[in-house]
Length: 508
Image (cartoon, rainbow, N blue to C red; front, side):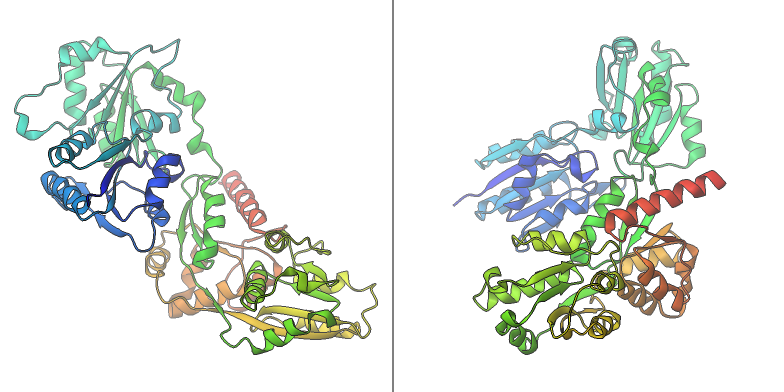
């Protein structure tokens, strides 16, 4: 039985620019064969059982030759696999997708082409350069800047190309920039024509150098930027000064360390990335469910005895209701129990189970929960408090002072992750992180422990904490805190980081 190959365009770099069909193909793949310029976050959509094969190429080094890649596609399809060939940009635009399709046809392998957003138009757009514009350009040419070296003479008709289109976009041309400029001038294009060279387009690492045909090679050499980069030639480059938007984002280019557990990091990372940040995930904790369920099971068996069920985290909600399901029960067991959630994220977790919190304190800290019960008669009432092991006793103690009987059940604990920390750790130690974020006391404690004697590397970054409790833990451990979010939520933390960056820019 033959499989099928999907030649899929991954887009220009920003993983959110992948198409819906491409995402579906990844979710259904048995094998993914991917290139160097594919954002690794796209691979998170691939089933865990799928085989991932890297075939990236760069100047002077090819993991596999093109013929070997072609044969790999054929071999995997003949094994009956669903194969995704994931290529940067669009597979049929200077991406050798046509050659791969020919190899599949020759071997009677069924295939589909899934077009991708091409860097030829997307990268200039992210740099604020429309490749066409009624006042500047009505025609566009897309040219390879790196021809097949086995062809001999160039097949580019420079005498026609130089002045034949208003806007010229060269892909993979960094190594030949000086020769491209020379050919354009020799064949009639004005040396004063604006040029932009854009590196790592559509990503937070994007850099743009603007010059003219006459001086762009020297400017790029002085800047030190390297491939991958794209070259735009034409009067449309003048519009960048007015239309630049991506690199004007408040956190553009800032390298932000995200220390949350891996499963939870994505929300914070996404919000930061939408503001232009380059996020570096260093999961300092993992959430480990308490393997001994006896205490929680006893509490669930006596749910009708409780007046309140208080959740201090979304983790607590997920784990509590997960156990409820495992016991063959559901939310109907709660009966008349009232629900309290520490903040909007915890309340949202309850809503996913069809439940609305009866109480959300105005401040999203444990002390505020206790204060919200100050005027309520709790005498003799039982309150169930399922939460993390080692949590501060303040909440339970204060509710007890109001006359309540508190059953505190440790249902999970924050533990050190077994892997996935090395890259972020090395970047932090090398001084390559601008901002460190902490979303709980445990993230601070575990990062300091992970760094050991080098813990002060954190203080060479701007440190942002989600709230005063986390900030107090950081201060106790010697970590300098620069930012404390006014609203103790993930969006509130991101907003606080943005405001701090703006203040720092004003001072500088």
